[in-house]
Image (tube, rainbow, N blue to C red; front, side):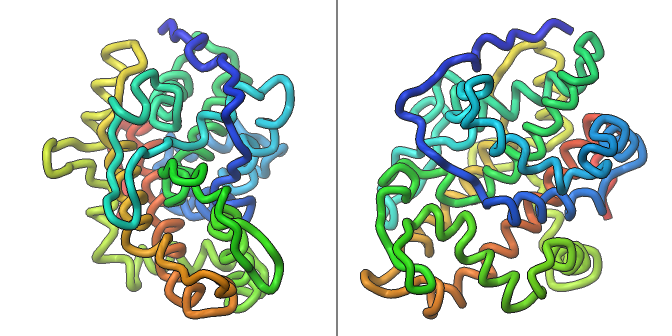
Length: 306
């Protein structure tokens, strides 16, 4: 399968620093996914990532952030988000044609690297790179401010976190998560990921998990299987329904909560933190589960999730 990659080799001077969930959040997404991989997907992940990443999507999940500031990968910075040109908290929406018509965003990136990770004409290193991008971008798309254009995804909004000056985007990337890990999980990402996976298997998330991997919207019915099948059969980078639905899901929190902060309030020591925690934990669990489902369909032909 011949894949055109030049589409993404564009440097955007407008691209700003955006680190998704930060290292801890991204690793948690990867560790959650590892607990739901089907046999062939697990085998590919372990053999592709190897000892460099402990054969795990957890350590590999931060690679895309680690390299995007380098000259060799500077073109990838714009692929970590989609600038939803909406108006939170009044109105939230994501539109492929409005916000990512040229595929130069996270929606197009997921499509591109999905085709590449199963392309056996590519080298092992190229397929590993594709896997690491998928690992990272499916995590990124669950961060509400990676699906928002206002103030550059919140980067331009100055706030306080634990007494220090920060910005809204950074607080959602890492400030809130770091406090959560310290307060509830003894600063252990694996303990946190195991807790989230247990909630999916037999706890509070068990009844919620099936809708997480549905790609149907109010205007279209789709599944991960049909989305991937259609993409691979066309042998071209085309819009996908699932990432768009997941982006819309994340973007909805920009209206319902993210921008509801009170000026001059420390977001990491107030009720804002308390009420943000359930959103963050659910989004991390969702994206880990979705990542596993995505890879299972690619390598095992079915979602194969409990």
